[in-house]
Image: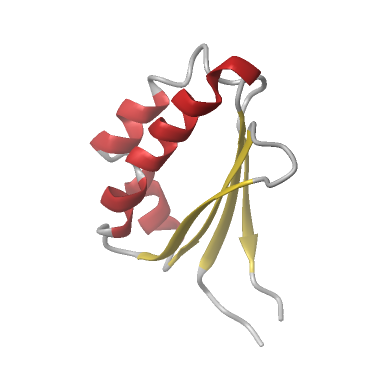
Length: 99
């Protein structure tokens, strides 16, 4: 089984005293992103055992749709507000579905 859709897992770890700020910032991009062309699914998760750990699980129709997303005003604005909220650099990985 092959699928040309692109999957993305993007993990953000908040500083312990910035969990609510990061959560609000990440939540602010969910609805605008779900309206974009090329998005199939866009979910934000928070780790039950570690509330500083947030993960986006995304599916896009193509790499081009993802690149367009990364350059939207709402994503660029959010990226500009990450400084001082994160304990480490974001871990963003792209995947192809194998089975």
